[in-house]
Every structure is written in C-alpha cells, then in structure tokens.
Length: 109
Image 1 (cartoon, one colour):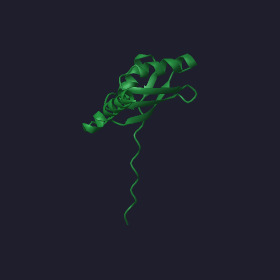
Image 2 (cartoon, rainbow, N blue to C red):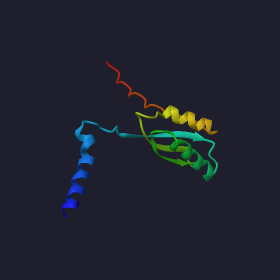
Image 3 (cartoon, rainbow, N blue to C red):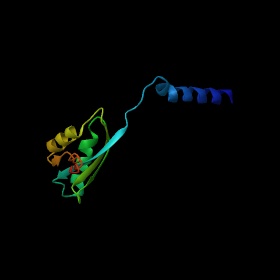
Image 4 (cartoon, rainbow, N blue to C red):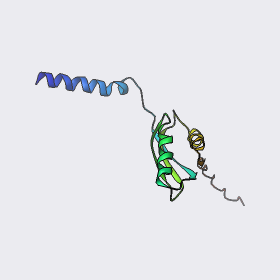
C-alpha cells in the first residue's frame, strides 16, 4: 500500500508540475480549408496524411464530396497558409478560409 501511495503522489506531481510552474498550453484551433482535386478516397487520405505531417496539426478530416478539409491545429506551431502550401505541393488546389466580413454599419440619419 505505501508503494501505491508513493506512485500516486509522484504521478500527481508530474501531472501538475507544468501548471504549477505557470505554463499553459495554447488552445487548439480549428479551420476548414477548401481543397479541389480530390476525386477518390485515396485523394482524401493523401490530403489528410500531408496535413498530419505538419508539426502542430493534431487532426485532419478531408471530405471529397464537399471539397473541404477540417483541421485541428496548434496556431503557435503552424498556420493555415502553411497548410495550403503543403497541399499545393502534394498536387491539390487549396485556399485559406475567407475572413468573416465586418458587420455593415447602420446609416446615420
């Protein structure tokens, strides 16, 4: 029993050490890229594999029916522009998501 308690205490210290030191992990972000040129499931798999090779990409899911790929990534390590470049090098046309349009101002009278 004492050995189990010691292991539990050590595990707790290791788990909480970064938080106690004031380190925080950046939140993962998600984006959807438009990708054309995916015609089969092999194409979708190639797109996913190319993105997952990037340092900072946690997950990628390509959908050839919608010509889109959803990516979960660490913005401190990779950008959507880098993802687009990797896809272009792999032979696919890709573009970054459009930034949201600013809200229209109401006319002043």
